[in-house]
Image 1: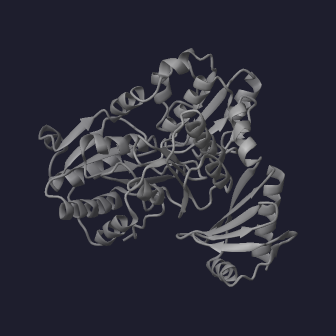
Image 2: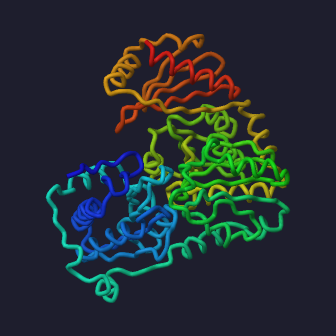
Length: 469
């Protein structure tokens, strides 16, 4: 049978390939065993996104748990991953299951597990669940009728979205945003965030806010390339103050400024730190992933804020958020979390925070970014994925470990760090990073420089060097 292996953010597979009802049942059976070993009595929250089969796979997971005697709170409609995270804390559940492949292409579905704390389940617990997955399990899913499980309230349909909406309303001044004069736009990328802004801020222009399981054949990841239609709409209109785009399951974001410029997660992270420190006078520790911008050190030093870098994967940020007073935690890939919310990334929460800052300060996104640049200097961060064969991947890792690379074409390497990948410091505060995938024969290549042209040039130099050495 197929091996079920979690990556940094859940188990994913091709729908009707390795992501099947049978494999979802196998994995959920392992989840049930893990829960029953830990708790005498517990419950699970289950949600799903807008992908093909989401409701079916969520129902399969619910049925397996219910047949084991575990109470299930099953979402009555598609929801975002942050909604499930918050619902876990609301119901005091043992964990949450979200059926989603996040930002992957439409062919995929996936299975995320949220811990009882309302954030990503810790790595050690995930590995324990993986070890419990049986290769010869044979569950009769029809042994107990669905209606019986519902009537017994072992499975209970719940409106997770309404719980989340109340959380938003009690933490944001939505009237201030409505009356601010800001002209705002929102792109749900056909994902499960599509109804949130419609209900909370009816005056916002909605884009791609309907269900399309194909995602218009564009992966629902808020990258500049994938948001071309949204960016073109904002540019051609000419009167929008800001655009917010959210990925397929609601936990990653990007912003578009009034001129149609794409604002990535690194810039959003620094805007948050700046606004929380300068305008709200808040302090606390900042946690960021190893691949995030080096300008974070500059802005944190400016405000006297401690900063810690952790391995890539929001569960590593969550681990620290559970133990310390964290102001902001974020990754360059678009996931950011904040104090006074669940220890998880939430694109809607962060987007509304930025919109409220714009309303409170009466400053444009461009003005806030320029305030950040006054502290950090201008910068651009770029990323590229390259696929290799297994043999070439091992050779590149060995070359990085042994310090074979002295330069990437014309970019001289001043020093090298090895933590979660290999980071190469270049002249003029520029850097590059090589991060091997743990599950596939490919690398993520990162670069940061003062301008986009320079960052892209560094990326190209790194790729050519490691592939041709």
